Image 1 (cartoon, rainbow, N blue to C red):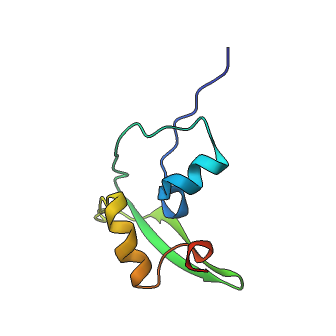
Image 2 (tube, rainbow, N blue to C red):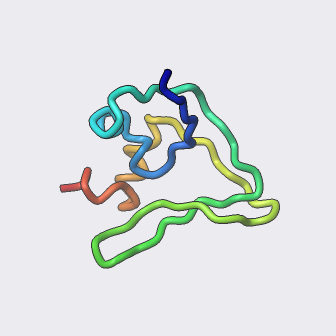
Length: 83
């Protein structure tokens, strides 16, 4: 029997078609909240990426797949999707 891992997706892993290519057996279970963490968008030499870090009493916003296009419009999306 294979083990099941539950993971919280953020950043480019919210792109369902892209995630389906990476992990074909993955499926969406629902939404969640990570209390006392904040979402960060960091730059690197090759582009930008999303990450989280602990932050006491920090609000964490829930976004939908429909919100992703608005994030890309503001230049914060996955650099691979903007090419």
